[in-house]
Length: 453
Image (cartoon, rainbow, N blue to C red; front, side, top):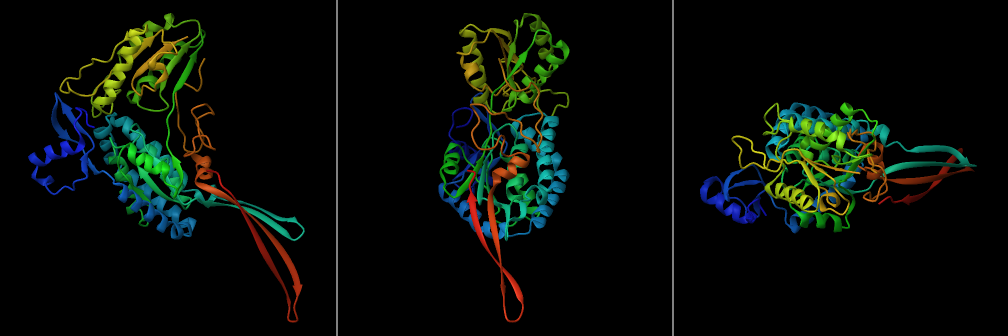
């Protein structure tokens, strides 16, 4: 559904009536982000095909067929493609950043950061020859050598959220395919442009057909990915974060951290800080926190002075505003209300300014749900840290109830290689025998597999 509740095919029909260039558009092509202002269609940002089930299965078949050849491609060849992809991303970083700002709404500075954080993972994949090394023990027993190797799994998949259109896919497919897997990438339906650009760059870098495939859609495609037995590993992410503020904490440093982690990127990141626990109460912090939040500039992402841009869609804005209103109705104090902020020239934009709620309790919907917007909740025992710094070569998420899987933050660093490969253990027994012509050695191999799915 679009922002005004119009079905995608209704939007397409309207577009075709006013734009002759779209008369030949396939029936299943639909508008992924139509801005609806005052109930009327105003502009289309981008369009991609809605993948049918038959097309999804065709992508799986293509990935399966490409896997044997790609798996046996020398790792140095796979690395060279990543080196080339790295260069191409540097070349087109401005194009990628502008696409992210246009489709997703974040500032240009934030969009460039999005690309650069993803680029770190491509750079990391360039060292796969070392990352994918196994182990070797000679003469573990008399006449027996043992070794372990990391084998690719097969077809892997990644499901991308709305908040980091470049970083998230780059944290998924480069490691997976450089390990020797093939990949199905599902971009967020609201901002697929960056993923499409990146896949095109991967093709330009020399990636063979069938190794990296893209499918588009909403929850149906997600279900197809999760249910398909040919997909051996799936990556996706999400989370809710807290910070504990002690009475003796440095006020300036703490407030800077709260403002940055709570409101930057319009709060649309899974590592955003959405809940602050003030030990001893928040009263001494409230006035200064409000003043700093008020000073943040809300504007379109192309404004170089903007601190935060719009949220992704009208539905998201309405959901954020609804959670804030529900909290107020259930007893929360609204210190700062950003629900009605207006940006001149963009009066119908999906802007939500910094919002601060105090006296929040654990039974409120705003606490139980991931708000995914620039809303900071203040209450009276927490986890994690206030300023997330994601690195491609380390794990960021601690074990907690929301975590599922064998490896923390599976797409990153060495754990990403572990996630995208399986251990194969081999034992070789050497036998010596005498022939009439010469002495020779032969060996036999025993192989066992351990799957980490």
